Length: 89
Image (cartoon, rainbow, N blue to C red):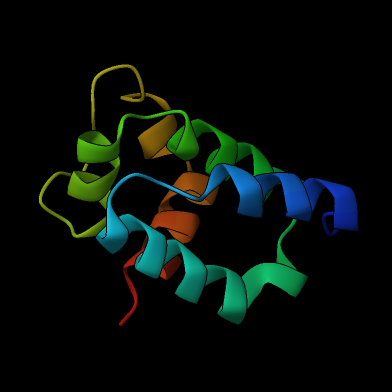
């Protein structure tokens, strides 16, 4: 089941970050995959967007594969898929 317009809009609004680099990566992600996102993808994105900018950046650019508080979540297939898509150039 894909995300509804309201949920997608909320995620896009939450994706506006303090670091321009995060904004650019997230914007590219939503342009590519926004209409295809599942409810599970939305949950993963909500968890990622709750991180502070530096931790999020570390995950997005692959500097880290996990951050404190998301150790278990990072091991799930849905989390890995969303993170892989976010890291695509």
